[in-house]
Length: 270
Image (cartoon, rainbow, N blue to C red; front, side, top):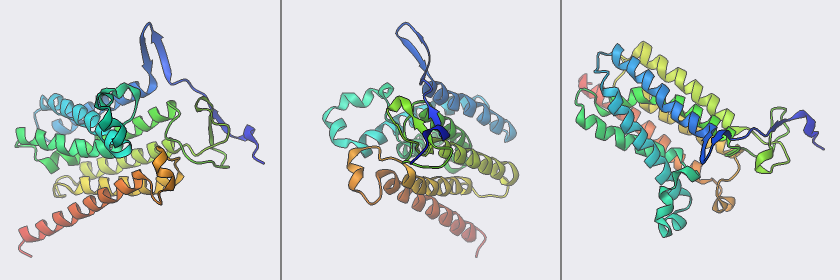
């Protein structure tokens, strides 16, 4: 029998403060902080590489729009398309929750392609190689926001760091998968930053992006085995929706890396 006294009772309110009809929540604060801190990182990168720092403001707007639209549409179309296509106005209610990282990835790829078209000195793969550094940081902050919301947690565990998500009605300890993912995003932040800092003059455009995508979604595939199902239809699936969506993402990263290597050999006449 599990001794519940040896686990972490998580009953932190998702709200920071309420002022009349306005409520400031940890998730919203952390989500916004990801963009603000990411903007500062990109300003540093642009300064180091001699790019117009004024472009960072435009880049941030593209990132915010691409992330929110992609993540929202991804959640609606990947996890409950029948409901949202029957009630399209519900898609607009972002404040009610429901964002998918796979959708955000697609949104960012499209958004930054449009951005690069307007800035020929910043090719698509070049800008993506740098933006993934900020995406890793944003991913860590968003997962901590999920922790404060007591959502997207794992299956039952008897490990001493198991969390009992009291506010979500849980009475047994579960894997704090939000923390696992946040820590992995910090690792990705370090890896991608070091790749840019030490090897940006030697690596071909797209290499940092491909490494980021392969590592992120390989981890995402395996961490899903520890997670609770997000929607009812996943109960009878061998692999859940997050895992099925991670497979093509990993394939894209591997294919991109191989393409970069192939074009590099061609350029050298091999």
